[in-house]
View 1: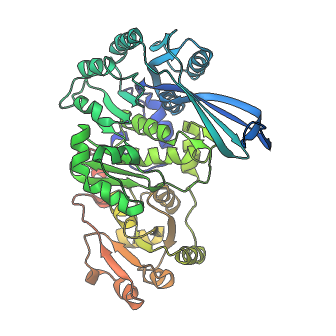
View 2 (view 1 turned 60 degrees about the horizontal axis):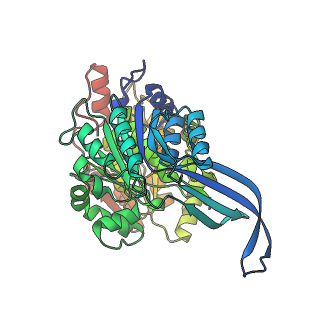
View 3 (view 1 turned 90 degrees about the horizontal axis):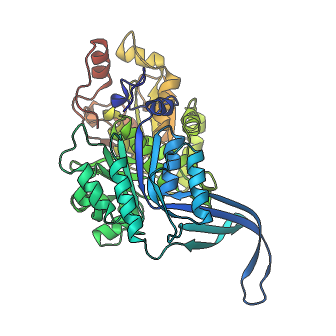
Length: 511
């Protein structure tokens, strides 16, 4: 991994600011993407009649667009986010293959390991739409991958892996990354405890069990893939999250991975480690019916962030933000460094007034949603904060974070605090996927705000008891509940600030 002048603290960076994507891009991690490259077609037109032969609509095509899909879309996202990318896969010598190779090369992606074979059909997926609605998808793919093409790819992969910061396997089950490619990867990368010479290994596969022997650092199954892994049907909503969390041991063992990130579409993601559920993200709703490839964007941003040295939980939040960007775009899209920065910048000045927040809460209650409120200074964001806020979110549907004003922080913490002003603190907290609303209060306690908003749950960290909280009487007046969350030892803003002032390093390895 390269080092840029301002990259030394990436391993402890946890705040999603608009400057973070640029800092990650400056690292320029070298990443090899191996897998099923495809060409996505997006054809659109108008429908004004049915065909004579059958009761089927006739689409008069007006626009045609082709873009890299599958593993190729993942590579495009990595390149757009600043990585030095090489892609390894197999395409045909057909027009689709030449189109795909040309688009990848034009994006600055190394295509020397992209094998072409005359007996191979380049996988294409053409979506035909009208009026913003996809009517039909046409898939064209090889029924079998030529054996000599597989041998050539395996030999190329062996040469390509060296000196990479990360290797990302995108296995959609077409047979391109089956044996002998899988055998070569296991031989070159080795297994067991990851050492300093082993790159980060991420597997995004329809069946991650096939890669268990590689002992990857991360696997990213979606809900359907997770259900197949567990051989059971998953419920919907929060019950689905709880079902996945309960199977953490089985998923880790079945995939052989050090960590599993289950992607759940509108329900965000769940990070599972041997310690249990470590982190969650929440997707921000999008209505774009033709969006495709958000999963590719997610795994690309996750891999880039981890390869550049960002902690795992912060990497997940960043990847969720990148996915949120592309689901608002039609077609197979990529998220660039500039787009991700603009998305995170948009959370600046997002603190709502009490009046506006009260109006929003009324709308949510009309939909039967439960409100959770917590408050604090949230000055220098750290893992204790993010874990605590993730827990608070799971107590209801909508999480409101009330920040102490700058004057209030000074009264509580003394001169020299806050480190970050109110606008910066609000922007960073609002950017977390688990947070729905941010507001600011200047009163000695949050009791006046609580009496006004009447949240169903008032949450505070485990270093308190309900009896210690000045806000408890206000909550109990209207029948609300006070929830005390887990206490995270050795994780406090004061401790972080003191370590910085004393010139000390991180207290423990970043997670």
